[in-house]
Length: 263
Image (cartoon, rainbow, N blue to C red; front, side, top):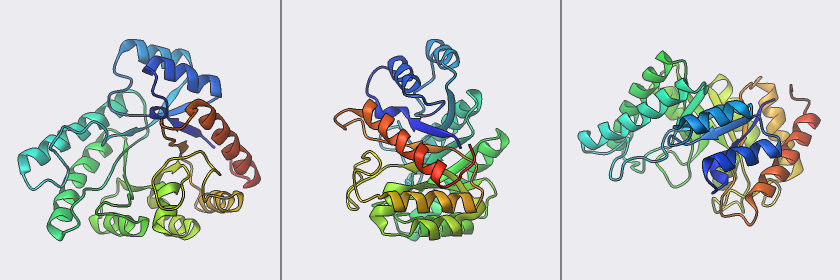
C-alpha cells in the first residue's frame, strides 16, 4: 500500500520540505499547483526518489473566481486554473488531481459546478489523470453521500470521490458504509484527525479517531480493492509537523499491516 503525505504540512521552502518527507520515509507526495514548478525542485524529487501521487488543483485559485461562479468569465478563469494544474500533474507523473466543491448549494450553482467539473474530467481523462471531488463540510457537497450522488448524476467515467477521514468525522458518516457505497468511484484517500467538529487536520489518533475506527476504514478499503495512495493531510499549524507526519505514518503503517492490506 502506498502511503503519501501532503507536503503543505511543512511550511519550509519546498526543497527543504522534500528533504524532510524523505527523511521521514515517504516515497509519495501530494502537492499544490505551485509545487514542482522549478527544475531544482523536480530534480531534487527525482534524486530523493519521491513520486508525486496527487495534485490539489483547487489550491491557488485566482481571487474572485470559482468553478460555480455565476459570472461565466470568472468561472472560466477557475476552470483554466484547474486545467493547468491537471496538465502539470500529467507532466510530473501524478495519477490524480482533485477539486473541492463550490459554496453555492442552490441548484443553479450546482449545475454550474457540474458543468465545470465535467469539462475538467474530460480534459483529465485525455491526459491519463483521475479527477476527484472532495466531500467538504460547509460547502455545497458537505457529505460523502451527497458528493457520491453528485458524481453519479454527473455520469462521467473519469469523476471520482476523494474520501477524507477528518471530514467523515465531522459529517458523522460511517466510513465503511461510505467506502462500500463508493466502490470503484473512490479515487483517492486523505487521512487526518480532529475533534469531530472542527477541521483541525491533527495527527492520527489525536482526536476522535481510534485504532478500531482506523482499522475498520482500512478493512473497508481492502474490501473494495482500493489500490491508490493513503495520503496524510496534516496541518502546518501543528506544534511539530514533521514529528506529526512521522508518528502518523507509523500509525498508518501498523494499521495497514493489521488490516492485511497489500504492501
